[in-house]
Length: 213
View (spheres, one colour):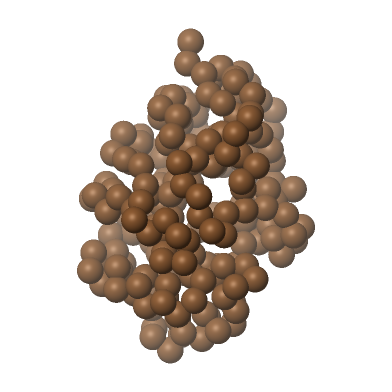
C-alpha cells in the first residue's frame, strides 16, 4: 500500500496562486532537497507522520471544499505523491501542486494544476532549476517568481522572454517578505507592463503565519 510522509494536513484560505482566497485543504509533505534562503517552511524538512494514501484521502474528506493543494517541502521528492494527486483528481477535487521546479514534473497528472516556483538568484538555489520542466506546462499552470531585489526582477524578465512563458501559462510575481518592498515591485511591473499577476501572500497578511491558519 502506497504511503507518504506528511508534515500536516490543514484547512485554510489559499494564500497565493490564481485561486487566492478560496477555502482549500493543504496536504504538506515532508522533505525537500532545496535550502532556499527565504524558506518559511523549514519545519517540513524532516519528521512528519507516515500515512497511507487512503488515510490522507479520508482526512481530506473531512473538509467541505473541492480545492486541494499538495505542497511541501518539495512534494515531488516522494514518488507516491503522483498517485495521491491522481486519486484526488479521480474523486473530483480540483488539485494543485506547489513545486520548486527542481524535480521532474512530466509525471504529474494532466488534471493537476502545477504551480512551479522557478528559483531566482537571491534564493541561493538558482542552479537547481530544471528548465526542461517548462515543456510540460499547460495553459492553466502557473510559474511563480519570488522577487527579492532588482537582480531577481531583471533575471525573471529575461527568463520570461527567453522561454516565451507568457504564451505558455500564467505568471506570478511575489515579493520576498521583509526584503522586497511590495509597492516598489508593483511599480516596476506597471512601468514595464509585464504580463504577470502581482501577489502578496494573503495568509501572512491575515495571520502572519506561513501555514495560513
